[in-house]
Length: 184
Length: 280
Image 1 (cartoon, rainbow over the protein chains, first blue to last red):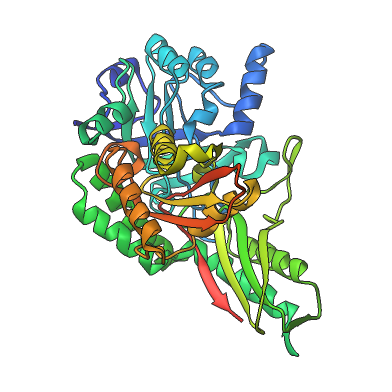
Image 2: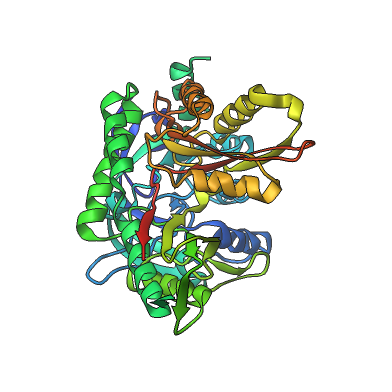
């Protein structure tokens, strides 16, 4: 289990060295999107229209933060479950997205697309939302304000603690980790 | 007849919605700290370390431990000799939810129409389970319930012939399939018996019990212990990264059933098992 510090935007050489189970500390810009925003982004791609955020080398964090209290950069901001974004992720990966942050395993279609496009899926600790919010130094709504918590935000993160959940070679921390501790 | 002002209910519900989201109850906190000590998997231990630290931050800064502050589920036992004045019960509860979720900077996750959407803007309506009981008190359990673990919950209308073995298979198969999605370590609420809807409600109610408490019937207490062992043998571990802590507790609630039916339900709660109780 190696440890890396990475900066966004992510490059192919950053991603190729990552193995499922590695610890990553991420710094830079990440964009937020969950179910409703993904549906809109992919509809724009289908229509050949321009997206409100860049995708090339970027990282999307699946999060709907709680409202920002006075004096804070953001409210509590832990990951939501990623499988709900599986139907949309391959289209975004085909258009340059390099990283995704969420919780829980991805399906085969996403894994195939990650292999093809050299991309990585990170897991953050679900429910550690107060802790994670300390890694977020700024947040700004950049699209779909009408979606409230689900709006697309541009976040600046510093040393965001992540685990490589599924890598671009098909490595999977869920399968590999659970096999070690299974007593059936 | 004893009287209780609706405004008092609103005030208490608002306060407890915030408290529940900021401060983990001692039973859950203790169980998580013990799990951290015992966990053998390095990734699992790191997750538990973060979870324990997270709850300390949430408590000290009075911010939500999880961004998913849930739908407001409220169990209420209303004494039939208590008269609520100055407003109706349901409005009083919903006003409390609205005030608590607004003042507390809690996330509003309630969509007005399940298909066409539209956020209600204040996290109402609450999901209220009201029972009329003897006496003149009002007992309230405020249980904010997040979507991640709710989505991995299941109900099955099994055959009576499936029996106890069928229940074990149902629980183990569904926890294995849920993997890291419901934010393990989870608390597993199991409902056995009743009708379709009663069974689901039993599983939810089972989540209210204190961690470490046993069913009063030794038969079910033994089954709870056996199921906890089976679930933890799956190796799912904290956040699904592998480990010996998949569930902190299994709680069973039962009800009489129809001779032809054998309903079994499983309601999961993530490690952020939030609930507050008050008696008025």
